[in-house]
Image 1 (tube, rainbow, N blue to C red):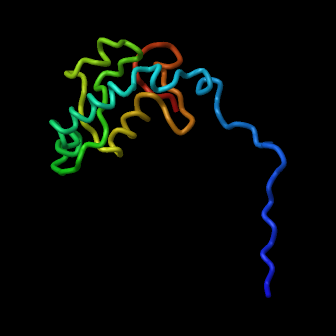
Image 2 (cartoon, rainbow, N blue to C red; image 1 turned 180 degrees about the horizontal axis):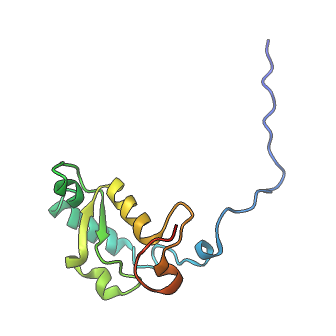
Image 3 (cartoon, one colour; image 1 turned 135 degrees about the vertical axis):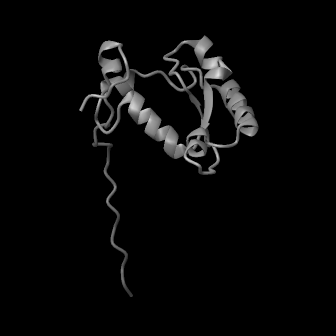
Length: 122
């Protein structure tokens, strides 16, 4: 009868964490305002605005999965809670917008480097 090979189990965790110093210093989602109160408000907003605004603009019908801040609030709680600054986006459009504004794939935006606009560095 065949014998199952043993599974390698390291004694201690040896792989270093793959986080940057910026990620380590970032506040938790709750500390940034995304609390239970936000989750409840976002669910209510999506119930009233169920379609992705970018998909609708392209003539497509797709459900909004996330509430996006049109103008990034950057910790400004008045802007954070301003429902006029909210829009429903599907996960794909929300991810694209986040990469465009916050940088992604190893890029940093000029805004993060100098506090200016949201032009991405290549």
